Length: 274
Figure: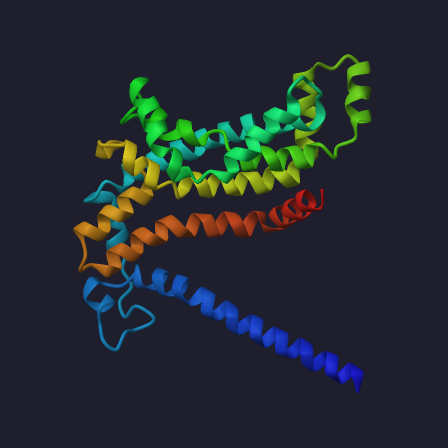
């Protein structure tokens, strides 16, 4: 009797999770299928799920008639520079996790305190500082405020702080320098947290919207997310074109998440336990 009840509970849970998955995934499927429809079919009532005559015209228009190639190039540059920032965050987390130096606790409290301040609060001061530095409307100005993130430093500190000190001591006795230890010993051990930080960094760079919109006045510095918002204003009646732009924004993130899903979950669990 008890076994039958457990099986029934499992079936109910599986059915509920399946229904929840379908509800969550339907908008993505709808978006992708609509991106392959003609503009007239995208607004048909009653709507069609699958395109009657699939077409790539919407994607061609994005790259041939609009500036999405420039937006894509800028977004890739932002993502790559953010990965350099991830390395800086890793070094900071390693320093907080494994070294003793005067003022370490106070400095780390300041780092954590910045997590409590909404980024919107600091936008005006950061804008004024970058204006004084002559970095308004530049790629460096877009990237610089997002290079160092307190949350990322915290995660690296939590993970690297749990690595046994004996490993580093043994390497130092063998004559290894600090940079050698960090890149050849610590970084390979930190693959789970690097996977987590990698996907978070990619998402942050790929979806970067508000700051580029504020600081970039020239369209040649716009990112994909900013270009997508312009698409809504310029092509309000062409929903198929908008869905094509949205697909370009979403699909890469979903692919990367699917590829690194195992490492990401492992990294979150490990850093959470520590």
